[in-house]
Image 1 (cartoon, helix red, strand yellow):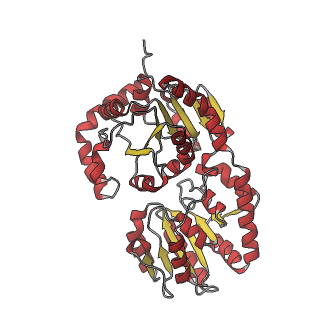
Image 2: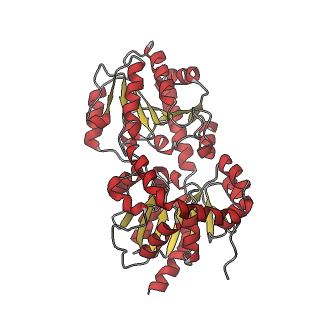
Image 3: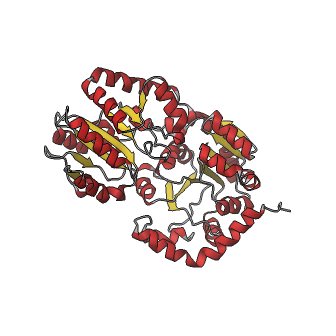
Length: 430
């Protein structure tokens, strides 16, 4: 007999069921904001748009872009081993990325909303043989629905920020019940492993951060050549994966830098590309000239700011800009992933709020492969020093690359932990 679940989980399930009839209103609101894919609403209701493959199926749930990129090497291994792979995510941006970064045999679907009805419909169709949840996207009905069907659940690249850990500690029975459904919890760091253990995860192993093993993002050679020709010999800096509130700081820094580097071009890559139009307005109010990549423009001599509001082109920007400010760190977001910038030879500067990648930033800062700043003045001073001293900038970039390479190995450790489950699937289907 199944153990009775905590009151919070039972209440959540009931409220989710009651909310199901009004979800179309929520979808309409999100669609207006560009947060949903209009042609794929049925997937949000758990209605599949493609048939289930006739093969053992490994389901990987990744919340958004970063999580999806991290599990790509795992998906490649799964598909190469003859398994079918289903990938679910919750953002429009990740769905676009899936079109060109997932292995050919992997199927992408939007994750169903966490309504018992939608989750049941999703599981009825796909019948996954193994489920891998990436990082910390723990939807109660999705997890309990899979567990009730006897699907083995594994948390891969597990991560718990201090903020999430603090929130979950207020509901110890709830999080213990959820984590108790996982056969295995593969944590990014010792600190993450300790947090999962404190919350009740039964079997924990520290395998490292899969994002450290992801290859450097690609760039179209023709597009890169065109962009380099347009920029010429101008000094270039990039602000990558920025969040609301950071663009104004970057523009203030650009104006300060212009005094000594009048030809400077600043490239802003918003974390959410749909913010591109708003950033153009902010640049205009600041009295600077900007063009957007999403409009098909290239920067010319009169362009001060280039807004790269497109999907999947960070590899292009990191190859263009030798200095990169990593966004989400001057506002209280927790920082964005600096690994790709480091792998492509950028000198990295970031704000103080980097708890999402605390261990990585700590390793980079320790060897001076990255520099932490607290405000616009400090950001200006750091970038100005690197623009004036290319040798110091290259030393920082080399230190960052060496630090990132030294932290790799998570892919091999994760695959070793997953292999018994994959072997069992092979034997079962034979």
